[in-house]
Image (cartoon, rainbow, N blue to C red; front, top):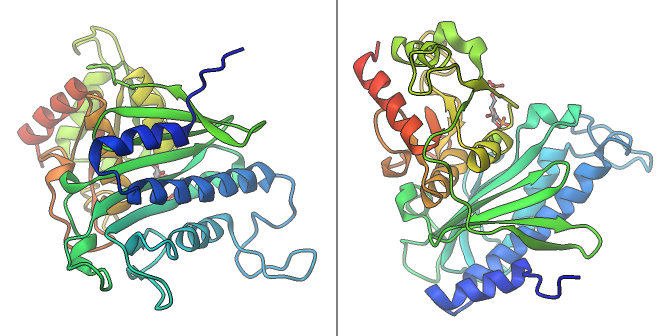
Length: 339
Ligand code: AHM
Ligand code: MG
């Protein structure tokens, strides 16, 4: 038996020596891990507990209001982070406005952005879903409430980022700018254990992941790029493999480990998605930071995701992310034929 198991707690403490030593980030991450464990347990139950998948407002067997899983996860992350005195403001894909710390709790130096349960259309059908988070240092003066300026920092300023996948096993992947590591939840001990040390993304993959039903709405450059991947004209001289789960975290995780490119480009003819679907603050930025840390790359097709200066909390961006050479090649198509 292996008696040198590296738990997530140990890894966090070892990382902490590298950047500050105050333990603020470690405390935040521990709370995220706690909330993720509760979500993982709920997801595991979701198939068998009556009504947990039901609409918000329905009643459970005790006559209590039942929360939809994504609404529940959102509250869980907020309540796990708002009292610890390390965070000054949060923002969530599920909340219209930024989330201030209640008056009774102290304000800290960090800002947390999260998508509590991504891939919501997959909840009801037992397909992998996930949580995504990004952590910044505040730019507003210490002590007071966090501000919108704290929330609207470019991804380049991220201090740490990660995601959790709730799937056949629960896996947490995170980085603090010193490489990317993955941990699997061992349900027998209730701890995340280092299972994927120092993850690096292959320079080029052979998988593409996109909702190809949107093909008619894409710009010419994107259509030509996908045609190219499916042909023998590409660098591999054979068609790429298509894999699309429809949960960003799960599609990204597969491509992170195996190599590949994920695309949610802008839809020129669809007024609902003129700048893509995915959110810059909660989805694109944290995953772009992880991708770059693993040797990959994320782009809108025209500029690196991490360089965008956000202008609003729920801003959407085209997201092309994955193996570096694949994403760079997409940029050539996008820039040449951007109609
Ligand atoms: P959500 O935040 O409402 O769950 O939407 C985000 C999800 C991503 O996980 C996924 O990549 C994308 O939406 C799939 O969209 P589509 O169904 O248009 O292919
Ligand atoms: Mg989402």
